[in-house]
Amino acid sequence: MMNDDEHPPVIDIHVAGPLQLCTLAELAPTGCREFCLGGGDWPLRGFVVRAAESVRAYVNRCPHQRYRLNFLPDDLLTDDRRYILCAMHDALFEKDSGLCISGPCLGRSLWALPIQVEAGRVLLAPGTDVQALIARHT
Image 1: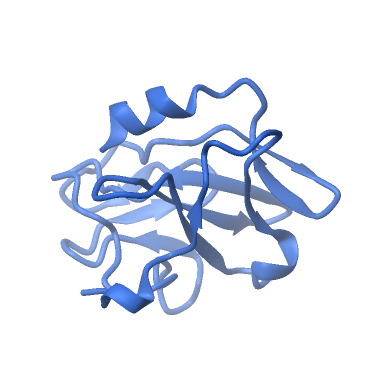
Image 2: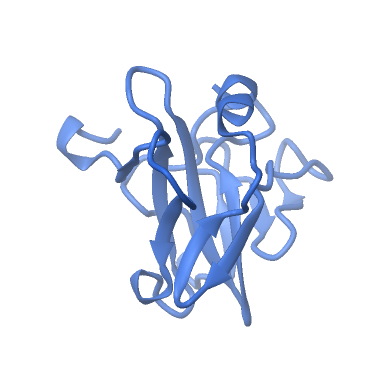
């Protein structure tokens, strides 16, 4: 499990302008990066993952039993970095679509978050209702 000092970065949802989830420079070519939208006991935990030439963002919850996918910070991928891995039940998800291709939630998908990439920054898409996302996924 994560220690209190190993939490992903908390993004203040009350700032004006687009919410930056991370920068492209913070993502290794086949890597990922976690984030929390909002603070407190129940923030929305998510992650950004590089998928081939694109970037995707997902809620950090397995559709099987809604547990977080990982135990260690930013440790969301298989050893070969090809798939997203649920550490609880070894489910495998495609990085590009979030579709489960192996495991107890076969055929179900991770919950995608709307993003855009602008000037090297990965942003939550403009107009996204952050409060609704937090209410739905926490």
